[in-house]
Length: 193
Image (cartoon, rainbow, N blue to C red):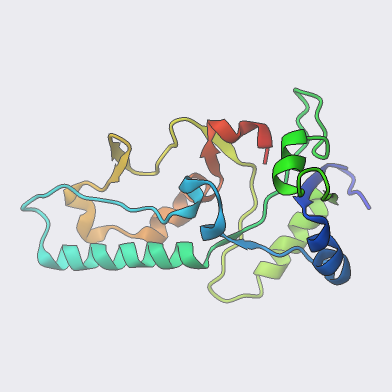
């Protein structure tokens, strides 16, 4: 059933996955972020700071624990991808040949159309019951180069030495979740997620 907005989002999958899991449970399973083929998504973000007399041993220990937090966050983060219709190219979400090839078992799988508004309502309701769990849904932004939420030096994320003592990965991710979880290289643009 479509919502009044009527926009569908599409999920491609293998036929076996659809028949054995999705059809019987009426649920979609999220994948671990570390299983993504996209290196920007798959690897935990490593931040660096320049050598400086401003950075104390206590600052170094704090920064190390923040990097451990980031690795743990990435290890426990999951994702679920959908394709949106592309009005500019007149593609519906279900008629993407490359998506059929890559995600739906070389054109032998299934593409499921889901009402976007209803899905997002159910998605946020499910996540609100879990303690310390954050759930986000948003369109993917495609950029080249990737935009980092901190300064970079030749593509390497760098935290200024005078900010190391108060650096917070949790705060950085919360304030910039789109840059971390809803950004892909421009090369993936035709996925229209």
